[in-house]
Image (tube, one colour):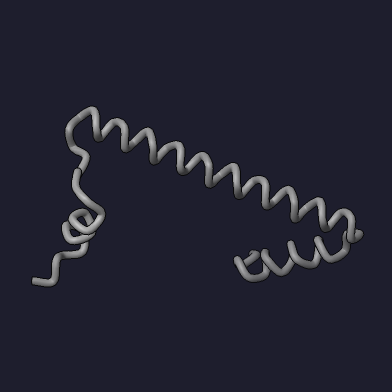
Length: 75
């Protein structure tokens, strides 16, 4: 059974066996997929925020007020 570490090591060794050009292609592909994933997460967060605004459940205030509400104002 592969552990996460051995699985990662296997992936690294497989990439190292590729030519430099192929390695660059792998790195570019991974970077683009991570960017796309992050964009998807941001878009979902925007949808969730818009729903909260429409439902009246979104918190409103200055950044300091929101942070105090989340973390406590220390008083």
